[in-house]
Length: 163
Image 1 (cartoon, rainbow, N blue to C red):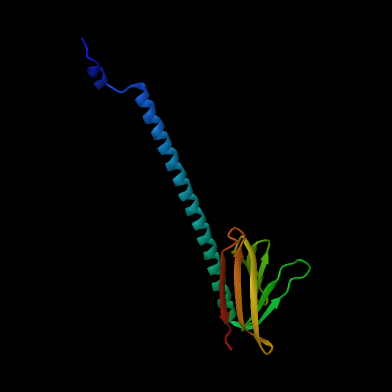
Image 2 (image 1 turned 180 degrees about the horizontal axis):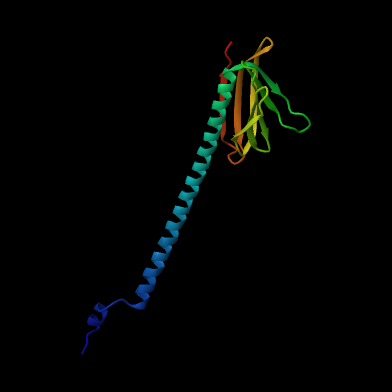
């Protein structure tokens, strides 16, 4: 004859197994939510870093052009068109920085050569330029990039022009 204690030692009851499966399901759901939040945070951080890298690259090009500038001319927007910054280099080369439909571009042209257009940054909502003049000449240029996907993220830089 089998004793009730012997049957109990042979395995688990169906109720016990269902409780374990339910607990594991709750733990799995919790872990999935935590991982989903972590992955979303990582993706947002990568996007932000990518935008900052674009802004840094655009700023580097702008500083390089400003340091080789003979004249700097901010061009105001006309009838909803883009505003621009026009730079004339010491060698006569003309460079324009233009923001059109969220794309910041640099267009460089030299006499007798076709214009070279390079995209510097995408998803840019706004570029604010500040030009300070010393007499008739621009002596200082400051700028801010604001990206469409990171409304709070602003990249700001400035450069003094050589005399």
